Amino acid sequence: MGIIEKFKFIKPGEVRTRFAPSPTGFLHIGSARTALFNYIFAKKSKGSFILRIEDTDVERSKPEFEKDIIENLKYMGIEKDEDIYKQSERRDIYAKYLEKLLKQGKAYYCFCSEEELEAQRQEQMSRGLPARYNGKCSNLSSKEVKNKLAQGQKCIIRFKIPAKKVSFEDMVRKNIEFDSSLIGDTAIAKDLKSPLYNFAVVVDDFEMKISHVIRGEDLLPNIPIQILLQKALGFPKPEYAHLPLILGPDKSKLSKRHGAVSIGEYKKQGYLPETLINFLAFLGWNPGTEREVYSLASLIKEFSIERVQKGAAVFNIKRLDFLNGFYIRQKSPEKLTELCLPYLIQEGLIEPVFKTEQYPPAYGGMSITQDYKVNETKEKVGFDYLKNIIAIYQERLKKLSEITELTDFFFKDELRYDKKLLQWKDMTDEEIESSLDRLTEVLSKIKDKDWTKKSLENILTLEAEKIGDRGKILWPLRAALTGKEASAGPFEIAEILGKEKTLKRLKEARELL
Ligand code: GLU
Image (cartoon, rainbow, N blue to C red):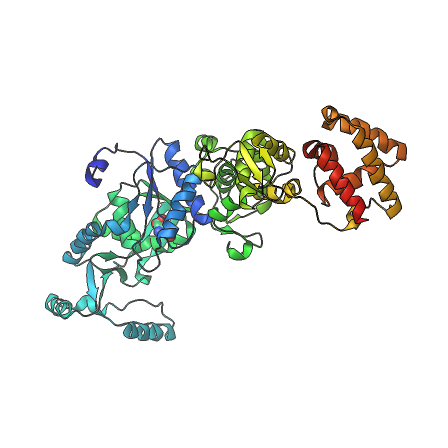
């Protein structure tokens, strides 16, 4: 369906929002928040959410950024309602409107050189005046313009900014006023087919029948030009909502210094889509209650633009971890295993043996199967075995990527650790040795069929009580099995490792001393 026919079917009064990223970087937290608010706002009103790639800046726009933006929106479940619009494919439309403005004398070609403009700026600034174009080329006769164009002189197209006071009501920032006499005539295109940001946005918002423009406050300085362009072109003004800035924990603008800033990086670390959605929603919005957990569906129900704050939002990574831990605990062990396996595979700990079902690509495109090989020991293990391992960490997992460090000892042949790790409090080497010997003796006697967490716990607790200090038995056991300062409890670990491997690790610990 062509663009014109498609828009014919839009119902009058229909809410239509857009997310309009420039593909000049990976999908940033701030942009993702803009996308989310536009999406929720449209869905709440049963309207449409569209995705428009603003790629008219040929030098800075890159296909890999466009791909990253599209993939990560998908990962978060922010679905567009129409095919993607790309500004680079709409140059004829902009040309039509540029010609109209030129014909009406509301825009003009400017042939001033960079040096000339720079000298002008310097001169204005030295007199304490705002730097703005002096309007020189607006006085060229049409013949002069024709000649210069025919000679191929370098030029741009400027919009004649009418000097007037303009005010409008922003849904978040309330009444905003500006005096356009402070802005000089502004460049809106490099040539008929190369519009600049302000012009392309105004034309597209009109052409795409955008009813509400929701975007970051950093774009507010462009609003005077955009509103004046709308007036010049005879377009209705959409409603505006400018979202507050996002600051890092130190209250400076969120940037790479504060850690990961792209959604892709958070996805890689294993933050779930539901976490990201819930987290982003609270960057500038809150329900006014104590409730913290919101799914996308409940946000659509509860969200209101009136509750979007003017003041900056502060990025709090602890909240992100809290939410992710929460959503991880909600998963079934099967689902969590599916989510974690790609990390174990990527780390080289295990390898899928059969690639059968394709894993949903949103989670990294890894194959999930029933059979795996442990790379170091060459053992064959099944999905359920891996599920048991992952399940004992479900409670403490904050992000999926942590699973490799928490569980790697299950997939190693021999553990490497300092013998000091085996020491509980001030135990002597002799005491540790005797604990390890005692453990070996007791555990050797347990029949395979009794090798369960429950009976291991019963037997070893009894043994520990004989010594008087549980730590003297259970700490060296846990340390010998994991080679780690902290881990899940020794009984559940021993159950999964099995008798043979448990005894082997006790023997290795004994040899270490
Ligand atoms: N393309 C602009 C940007 O990425 C946003 C355009 C708009 O929302 O008006 O900053």
